[in-house]
Length: 232
Length: 232
DNA sequence: CCAATAGTGTCTATGAGACATTATAGT
DNA sequence: ACTATAATGTCTCATAGACACTATTGG
Image 1 (cartoon, rainbow over the protein chains, first blue to last red):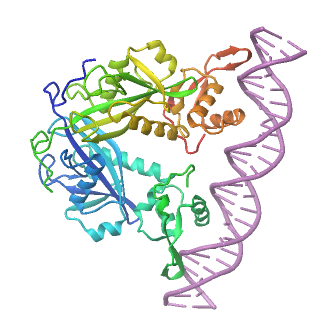
Image 2 (cartoon, rainbow over the protein chains, first blue to last red):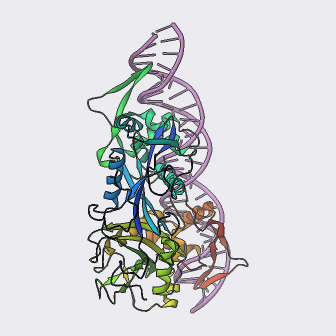
Image 3 (cartoon, chains in turn red, orange, purple, cyan):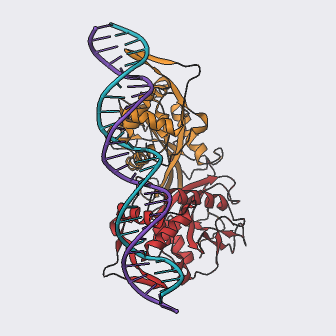
């Protein structure tokens, strides 16, 4: 019961490094990819790492703000979906000393990413990762599990698509993230309709091709973060 | 791109206080309760708070170890279920300065808690909370949402029960956490059987009363952290 | 025998999966 | 007309919910 020191900056315990990491994910060539940057200095110089940096206690309102700022500074992007993942900590994950990193994950449409075209980024399929700095291979693993797990009962896959999409695109996105047997197109339409999460663009817009034009849809604004009781 | 300082302990950014908090929950009088301790010093002295303390960078192997150590030191308990909840951070949540707290939640059988009978603890129903120190009212809210959400498709409610329990006790525990309409006893038996998570005590044991004796069950060791595809 | 709860069996309505059919563009 | 995919409709089987029924103890 002696743990109520007056100050955390006392010399009783070693100082702790506090950082924030963001695993940025996108869907490219029908595969989930993670965005990394090659480190240009510090520990693990020359090695790819997730997007991350120090907490700025003087300017960040909190962890979410720190993650958004870091992502913006390093890629120029504001991710439509960004959430806290897990906080990783320990004496060995950073050679500079004991560290705590608030891990996040973010999703972005691959077209938005390619239009922004941030400097120095690389993209790897999540199951063909090279060795990453710090504990970032572990962070990717945890993030992918979370994404796969949550995709089945939430609107999370929508954030890997453009704002306007066809139902077929949406179905394929769910299929690619969830793996397993592809969903029957007819049944997918019925289910997504029951869930009441999408609406037709008004006035109607169509995506044409060598087929019957597909009506474009968007997510219903009030259902952007919907979580379902049942699985897709 | 200037965030790759050589040292986190440089004077460029204010130092950050790192703590760990544990919301300890139990089921008492058919209501979910949270355990708090009245603070005997420091900020918010005299106010009830979740179980928490500073990270000990010299001894804790990581956040999970820090949470377990804090819980053990302050209550003498080793919780059968303890998981990371969310990391709360910001300039105002602790009057001592900018702080990051790795929030956890733990579940324990009320009988184990009462047998241990830790000093200085209080228990409140989660919907009749007094004002707590720091952002602990928020932490309880987040934890309760998580518990309610996850209970429906996991074995989480088992950790609020003794090691050996009747199916009726298990059903009532799920009912109490999930709220809503109580589950039909017959249907609950069928579902819990399909999920393959419990087994009869061997040799059979019974809980007697003014009724037909109820067979005692336990969770299957290999299914302790099972997550289901569907809802109970 | 009665009260009380444990535990089993059965009917039905809902809804998911499988699959057939129709619609509408480009070539 | 043909191809390709969008979009709708229908059949069937599995299962969740409702509820009736039987079992076994203490009093």
